[in-house]
Image (cartoon, rainbow, N blue to C red; front, side):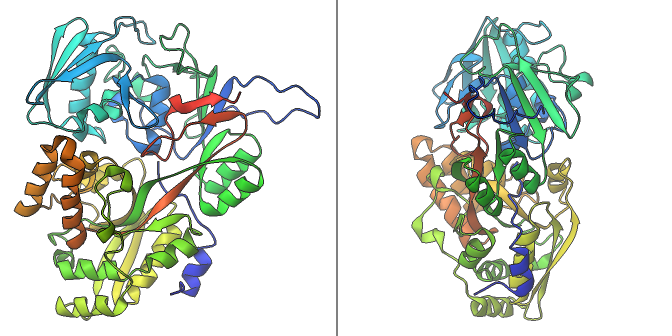
Length: 509
């Protein structure tokens, strides 16, 4: 089907959605020698709310923290984990104790020494600080200092993703002198490759960093200055890129055409899926969502291919499953499990006793105005009313979701490794399962993934199958992340990340 007139008109304006500085100079005159690239300016979607490492998030918002903070482990562009502040690590036979050997030649920007006590202070602070990713250390019961350069993480049960988490928010290390202070909220104090230039940094405008002298790892410190220029509007990011004000940024399909015309380089990847999260599956606040036939009807309402073609200009892949191909948990049978079938959707609503209709409340999400208009129209076609309320506040949306403020939400979610994704959207520990929905059957499948070792991805296929059949979500598509750079720099894409890690950028040769 084609989208209705209003939705089709809205589709002309396509947004990149959520992902989550000093202006770069223009080109020299004809015949002028090319200047050496010493700075990097990135067009960022939003500013960091707090620079305390315990408040770090993932996705788009992890990158700025990487400028100021080293992590315990380094995640390479292909996803391989390598040494960073930890030089070696190993589990015991039961995978309930992870021992890390630490570097002995690292200091923080305030002069404090990095050692086992500092690492423990950070991990303890992360667990108690109630940050958006505190669940990353949920399995860790305590952290023990073995000696000056060795720590042990004791786990209540195995966590197949713990090493991954130590390359992400949970692994960021700040100065123990600054942890928990008011000052670290506005000025990071880490051991990372760059230090904040406080005088040049302006809240919600730009965050400026300069190379830290005597930094221990010159292989990842490739610029003299790194600037994150805050540009929430995709058109502003596009104009900044093609005019040379920023060197790299994420765009959407419509604005990507302008970047292509300006000969910008595209680093494309599929990382996120977008769709409806039907959060209140037990009907705590919206009784209709407790009925699986209602949730299935919602899924049958969507013409996913037409949405991809008309709203994303073809830059995506229709899907019915929340796990991505890189996770190993996808199956061909689930890719198009819910075909576009309004008649079937109406029949399911009738069988569920909701022939007269269902009402679903969702918040507005900045950047998803077009998608919400299309979702509203197609749900209306089967007799479901979608009420779009006040916009979410980016600074508090994770806490609002955790507080069960929303029964459903249209969102963009990262498709990570099986255990990471399970604990992000499915398990009772997951942020995006705020009503703690589960069943004994599902929990048994989740437990199998947790203990599955090398078979975790295959076992996660059963978790994926369960939530698709039970319509926990209404995925629409996997979106092509369109990350563009100019010719002054090169960047390696990062697997399962829309925005590359800060370590992946380098001056063009």
